Image 1: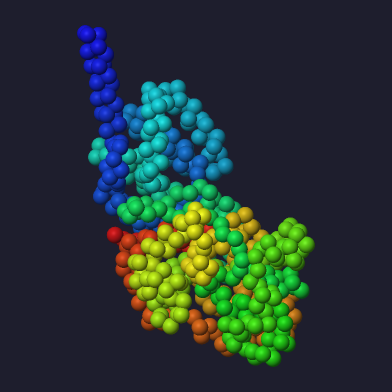
Image 2 (image 1 turned 120 degrees about the vertical axis):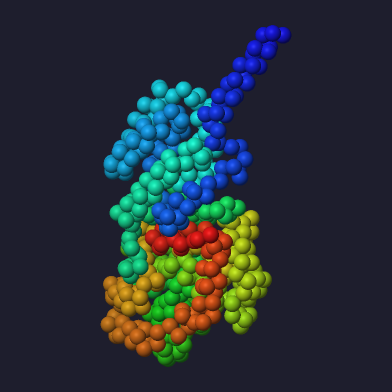
Length: 458
């Protein structure tokens, strides 16, 4: 009996030691929320969440280092973190990871079981919360957080494109292929997460085979005009005879519908390149028009939901009509269910409201596609679009007609700048919860095309 008491007493001592050393870790999710001071620090340093992380290995290193002997080696960890990790090229990260891991492997008194427990707990935290919040280590946490923010800003400035000043988005490996490294931004609205990158079958392709010219149309991204232009290029004489002007053929491109689109990618490759996928992607010219995700959403919501003249309003807007909160919450759930193959997608909702990275063969094929940025000035966008047409060997007389139509009849259909559209924008940006939810829905678009994340202030 005495031996049993000694045994249980020893276990109790070990448990108390463990709790003392790792007091900052709680099994309750609420207890792991960031402190107000930490949130304020993040707001100050990064305008809440104006950066996105696409580098996996750098954070693997940091998490492993901070998981070992946290209370005993704070200063040493910070020195390694700042002086070594920040000072080397990204390609050396894995080598450093192995060196640091080996170093702490021999000196750590923490068991592998405990380290695994810590790492599993940390997976539930966001990228900025590399150490669990605790009053004792709050200053250290803020220092590390600030360092991470600075690193993120440096990496993004160095390796990404500024799409707002460019008409054409070219392939960028540091952005395009890092989406599998999925990390969401820090947010106080923890019930929802950023939607991960996913791909839906592309059935919205238009083409002019005689020029080997192809586009995939995305709703609210100059889509009505580009389908009319491709219709005109398919049969110039017939189009002019029936419609006269591009805008007259926007809503009913009769001679072209189901003739030059919309087709699935599989149909295009089968019918136009004899199932030769390589020939299609490498020898044809591919353009896709993209847009700032929030601008695109507001434009689509205004056109289909806020206005009362849409005959498909109930289906298009999840029976929410102009209720922005109702719509965003149901859109979020709808995307997740479609992504998990628990329901069939509504094509009109998909084309107008789903993330652009889920459409148009972005995953795995973006290196062949030239992305034209609709969220620039009209002059920059039109010039880049006209250049793509010229580079596709479109005849001069057809180019003259298209340029004239664009300059003289500029997007009368667009909802940009209307009072109703601005009202919807104000509703969205004045509600942190709704703006946060919209950003999570379109997070992959922000990352892929380097559009700045909205500044959310709770």
